[in-house]
Image (cartoon, rainbow, N blue to C red; front, side, top):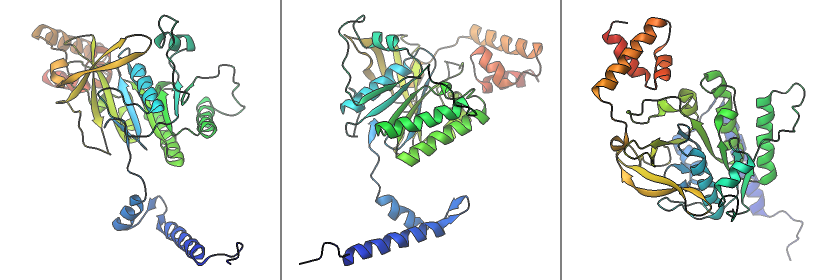
Length: 348
């Protein structure tokens, strides 16, 4: 009979292999870089699971994703709907869910509990019942900031504690403007996104972050440049998608895929998803309507409006010659390229 305390030959081999891999990994690290053969990278990747869809091709497992839109277009409504879908393991009609039912941490920095209640009830009665895997998080207003610790660092530490306490691997953060002082400045966006990306890697998380868009020209298609603090935020994301307002019918919203790494771009300008927001009983949600092209839902500008916009651009530049194209664009709800073209025509 085999001695239970003896070490098997297979165990010795496995331990030797493990030690060998550790040595290989250590040797691969060259300061800031990790250097391995292309085949080695693929062999190691084969042992990791294929990322499953959490919200169709828009957001996959293990991704840091951004959902962005202008105010009052329904970012939070859609985000809660996605969280509800994942926590129940039931896809939203018209969308795909491949991942298993699991716990979701929803960091709500937008609504109070009463505001949340009214959205998911019939005028404060007949309340919608969420799955217990849906964990909503609010800021503790009674918490005291530790000595010599910044609010941002305290917030980051608290995020990690919540992850460890709950064991959740799905995070939704509503919204990113609460997590930093000014996300239009690279110096603030960079450490924030680096921290979220580090948490994602450390705990194998899937993170959806909600973000606002600054004033934009609604006659133009939505692009990655419309994310507030776009340059830095986009660099640290694996994917992003946006909600736009239909100017064909103000009751409609459209969802557009902006950036992706784990799939092809399915929902581009030629294949946006059209939805309407309604509450049939006690759950405010996006309802799938149809597919369409973005151009059909953009604001149409006539000649008089274009002339007025051009005049306003020239007037702002005349009043403050040091004003950048981006600042002018923000004030007038257009884009910097449009401003640049107008100023160039007038040699300004």
